[in-house]
Image (tube, rainbow, N blue to C red; front, side):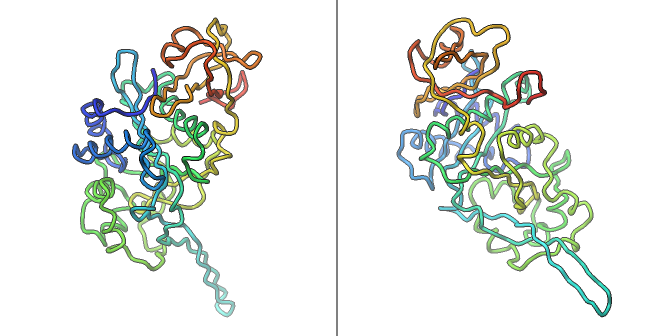
Length: 344
């Protein structure tokens, strides 16, 4: 498997992937016109023809037969061209000494606080490929790309996690809150947001703080909770240093994770080494490897060994990276766990 930048020829495979994502992945709508525009813009982004506010680094996971089986992306900066909304979870305190009453009530504030940060988005892997190293490679390849080109990204990186919804795509948070203001199904609002029609959020969403005690118990319970299918991604990001700081999605209340770019494990732990071809050894740990190119970027994951400033990989890995002995490679251990510990 290899992670590489998207190409126009990938569009049919991307449409097929988009149709299988279900509700909640708003940055990958099953809309041919929108996806065509996105792929074209991503190609320009990798060529350096887009400013940070417009940059869309769209990657695909490709198997050795050339089939595209997954997708992931990095937005250079959110909210600089289109409004970027979240709810900030706060607290309102009411007290009366005379009546001996003290109440702490969680409150939702409509906010644009995360504007300008880079975003990890559009992560989706075909169900039959969710095995082995595939998911981790697809997700973490973006972090190694950021490590190689930190000047392209913001001081902080965020990731909006998919919130809770049932098998029919119904969100309890939406049913208790959003439906009253938008008068549409969750899936429709989710889709409109994904294709860039965000103006309706500002036009219809109340600006004043919302007291969560007015929401249904089911809605309150899912604030800041991730969908079951998203739990592996949540665990992976936490392992890289991301944390929840009280911001949630305005539609399904999924948490927004964030981390200072320089503090992401794959960024500050990665090394620039010289590629060597050989036998890493049976006990060699898995490394994430980047060929240090931009528009011809290729990232792989395989057992490797660091020795005297070199990264020893097997011939197949070098072939996947399209690299030769003596080439410069950026690498980082796939996991921060020490040998013998449970890892991702």
